[in-house]
Image (tube, rainbow, N blue to C red; front, top):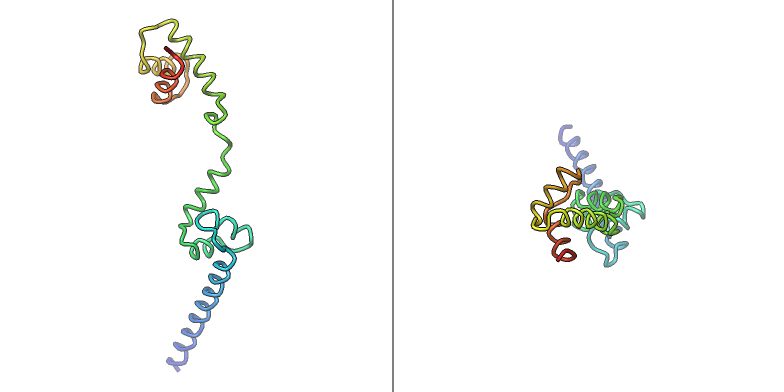
Length: 132
């Protein structure tokens, strides 16, 4: 009797495994040359589960969710250039008041006096490109 229960459990396990393999084969057929996170995104849009699509294409689920988060984020201010223009105006006004200051002091002034949170490398780049 115990042997029959064990064998039935094994049959159920093997059927699940066969179903899983059939799903993975369908996913691989449908992906056709699209690898990585984009392939997973297309498969999920087609109705497959995220875990199955990720497993079939060899992509970590966290990579897929990171892709979704990055896709959902609005375009950064840096890409639009609006923030750089505003920042450059502020840097020019500080440099006109204090012409001997370098990017480190200008960065600190932006942070302390202006309340602008900015990386020193960005200030350095803008000063190098536009301030002589």
